[in-house]
Image (cartoon, rainbow, N blue to C red):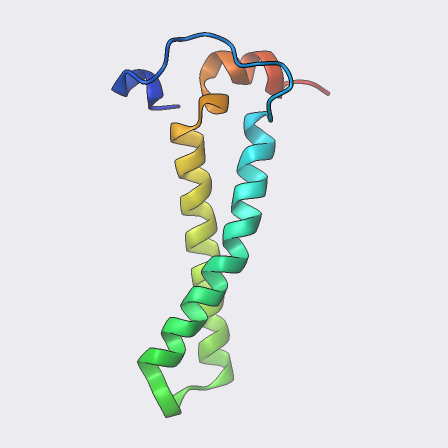
Length: 96
């Protein structure tokens, strides 16, 4: 699923064995951007509604921001990270 080969950024070689696997990289990125996305959308809600803000409305905006930003960032990591190329997933992500 990685787009690096399509754009010519990949040489098709395996990454180093001590690098982070794709699944862990995606989890960490999504976790970090969940907090940032929730906070950013909460601020946008406060700016948009001003004094008419209610708690359920601000929580709804924060939840939507957390979900959308974290899933978007995880998708970008999956598409453009060298660790998420098919040969690296096959070599390093299937460890149990």
